Length: 249
Length: 249
DNA sequence: CGGGAGCTTGACTGTCATCAAGGTGGGTGG
DNA sequence: CCACCCACCTTGATGACAGTCAAGCTCCCG
Image (spheres, rainbow over the protein chains, first blue to last red):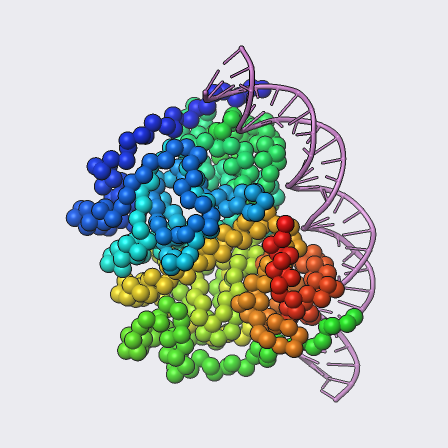
């Protein structure tokens, strides 16, 4: 009942020919680890990349595939999922334009440890790992930024381990919501809208719980007027309180 | 009853003056990310480091301390622990000689996200972060190896997230034992002995459970003749079976 | 407008945390 | 060197949190 209206998400489709040569150069310059490069250097680097467009829900690579390519999100969102043999999934990361994925290091016989799937239509740049390593060797600023980002991700990962080990489900979900709000949130009449198709299952896979339990918790948050949400979308109405919940005691 | 005998661990003490200048050079060359450096380069790098000796159980730095120093384990073992406000701990990593710790990147206002504590007597080298970044800038092979190691740790972390989200306690503990066996195991009459003082609490903090539950599981493994263990030590008698348990279904 | 994917909610169950009460090994001081 | 004592370990009883199963609902897409 009540506050579920039609999806307020921006139309996530129709970026069909965004992956043009012109745009690539502009976008590459926005990628964090290329920011220190000159225009000429960027042009050189750009030659090594290939652009691809993916529809929502497509699989970019699968857990176990040979890992020879590094990718960068130019437009859209990508999720990294680890699967167990029984098919349960764990959502490892939700990526945004500018984020890279696929091991930046990896020797010839490494494989991906996770599956990458588009969460919206997306444009992805690819580079051969050997080429990327050459770039890192040539420009230490690039290697350094990649290291910074990887370290940052390691720290996030460890925080999540801490949460899984010590926090009850409610707090974990509150924390996931706040984090997503910070990363993907946009101002909107409903509150801070998370610009991302986000099912209860996705949320559950991020918080390490079942979709049924995630649903129950979300219902409670909705009753307490902390969020508004519907099918595949969530908006945060009271972030401070969610933060308090995720950290209290 | 039965198989608990006196600790079979090698005497973990008395490395008092291992931290001599002579040894430092030799040890530095063994650190993974310095292996590509020439002797002369190593000598230069060595100047930037300071050696310190710690007794078992000492705290090297605390969660929240300002992070300005990078450290390398030369001898002994160090554990990284994240604490919640209520004082519960999560064991993030158990380090051995050659491993570095403390963020390799970190700007001036970063703080440590975990506490580092010695698990045995230990010898630790320290370097100022700014100096280390200079080294990485100068020698891209060093930056690259650090990136490799960080990526490797990120992958381990993510695997652990998967385990915490999907596996029951028994399998998680089986997996922790196998991993520790691979990293710290030494051949011994009892089986593959984990060369490390390792309490049930430590094990529990690695597997994300309580020490009581860890104890119960260990008792069961002992009955099934998969391990031998006593106060603060564990030896693996049947690794294949433990592996099977950690991965089955 | 019909079908199906996604969401909600209830009832039941099982795993595991918690609390608590003994054992036991080994480090320490006399 | 021995005895003591404490930290560590074991094991039981109890209960709660959250997973599973299942049924019905609703929004959306075609």
